[in-house]
Length: 218
Ligand SMILES: O=C(O)CCC(=O)C(=O)O
Image 1 (cartoon, rainbow, N blue to C red):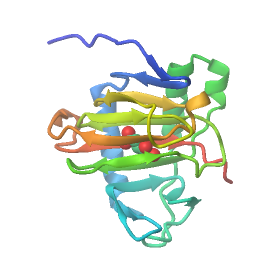
Image 2: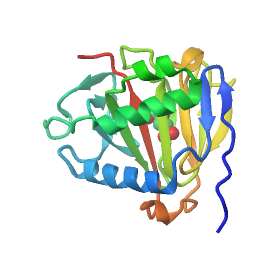
Image 3: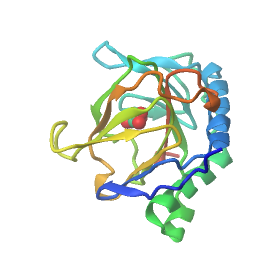
């Protein structure tokens, strides 16, 4: 059996940290189980409709607050009108640990209180175009966890969707935190490498991404 060798965190852009292999296999399995339950209800996972009529290629389910383009609501008015699942305390603790891992600031990590998670499922064809996460009223960092297939994650700049940007690979168990000067940087997922995930995570195919955010809403 090979030992897991911790790899160092890397600052990909100012305030944007990549921590490869942050989640253990057991933690990934627990997250997959939780996400699978959320995907069935109270609000089922779905392809989000875009204001101009298109649909996103990823499927999304939310906890805490329901996201649709430009707004967060407690009820999923564009799906079945039901209130989304509560944001669990264990996820707040996970978000705080991720914050501490990225920035090493115990005080700031204790104050970090995510209240929503967007759970995205990518099949082999799904992609996410370059966008900014700016529907939150808070500039607290966005914590992102990846499970399953490896993808190319593109981290750009705060001004345009195009260059300069940096492409990295996010693999199963990786943590990525987008905060500080990069909090509102454009970012996206131009490619998923189908079939690269380990089914031992509980995900037999595809890629799961969980972003925990602070909405700043009450
Ligand atoms: O799937 C990812 O790694 C990124 C997801 C993302 O950009 C988002 O949910 O806003």
